[in-house]
Image (cartoon, rainbow, N blue to C red):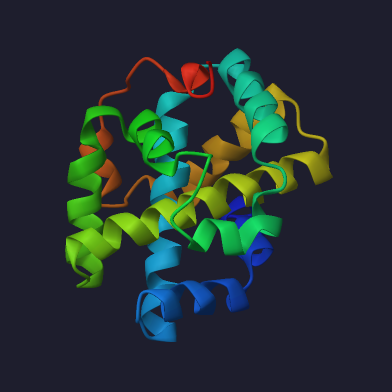
Amino acid sequence: MSNLFNDIFKNIETPIFIKIGKVFNLPENKIKDFSKDSIQILLGGLMKNINNSKDAKKIIEILEKDHLNNLENIDIILNKFIEKKPEKILEHIFNDKKNLVIKKISKLNKININITEEVLEKITCLFMGSLAQTISRTNMNGDVFLKVLEMAYESDLKNNKILSILEEKKKFNFFNLFKK
């Protein structure tokens, strides 16, 4: 696994994954596997949508502005009320392939599709918070973030079967996510 993946996964921590597993009645090993798959897919989906360092810089701004404290809000994330609208984040990352990604993750992890979607939404909020913390802690700029994503993609994402459904690069529309 890439350093970026490992850093994101470590930021979230095992107790948080166990908490999510308990909420959805999933065993510890299943939620850890699900979380690893989800983080890889979210990283890959994000990478597929970033076209240049300007896009990467814009993502950094959004992450630091809107998601830096996500990991401190685990109880809010686990409850239904989430103002960050993770379903919208998933739509922006995966575009029109969101439902197909959820279906594939569900099948891969042998988890009901409705539970898969809910758990993926929770993990998406945590992923965004963890990524924001990593970027903030390391002072990444757009060029460095793009290179780190490319290295993560090359080392452990490019052969991911679920990511292959995102093969055509889409115009990045993540920027409008929090406009009012």
